[in-house]
Length: 228
Image (cartoon, rainbow, N blue to C red; front, side, top):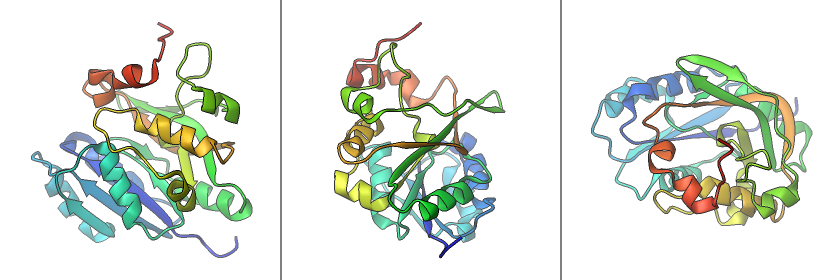
């Protein structure tokens, strides 16, 4: 590998102490070590801060302040980041142990690529499993993916991108209960193709109390038609 790129890993958190430690452990156990870890907490009142303090020597930047939303926390984290490559993993979700290695190799070997996705990973009842990567043609992303006739959403945990692309796109909307990642992908697609690789990056944890399930804001924001 050429010069090892610095990867910035961003974790937003708010009152998710139940699963936060698993997220942190999945980050600090990465096989590729040239990364910084940024944790942005929204002034949690559960055991989150105690967990973060336990692992503070592994965290390069941390703040706990009230924010507008999960996406606002991610946006703040990316602005603070020093790396040219971003991995965004929410509290409760987990990175594959080779996530940073896989991402670093691709972006180093493919300098013209700005945005990638890998295999879709899920955690349910403590079991982890992966599907094959979905292909997302640029035209389909621009037209909207949230329809039962197509694949569905681009899984944020399986995505990595260059910070320069994020800046060029003007970044995430910080609106609360918004499908902001969905709209970020559409912004990215205006200028760049999403490249798909058969690699593991992250796993999304499914549970009954996750905000996207409780609030159904994806359906409201995107006009998603359920296939159920």
